[in-house]
Length: 125
Image (cartoon, rainbow, N blue to C red; front, side):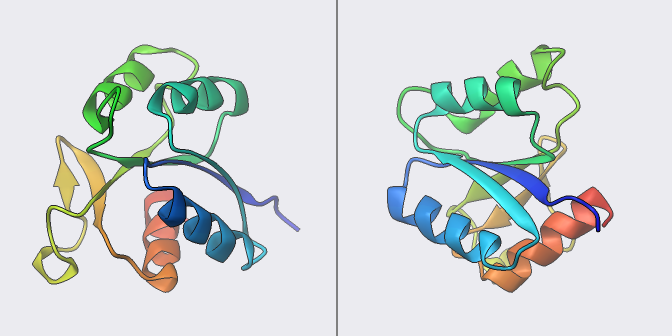
């Protein structure tokens, strides 16, 4: 049996993190690391080599684009796919394979099923 998909979730909304982590892990297919602190998120990415990073765009301390730039500049994390999470657009406004600065993004709120399906498409699983 293949291993679980390791996802790092970096989002300043504590409740959002809790429910995404709970819902993904309840499928038995995912291991989720979550933090509300973008600086801690960069460290978690370096230490844990997740398969994919779900990254909020607007956060205090450091916004998602700055976090993505930092991860891209680091040889330990530069190849990890990053998917931006945003409440700036609505689910119905998205086209298939929507991107911001060449990176996929997912509109909030997102259903667990849609999130899983998009993760698998991006990881080609």
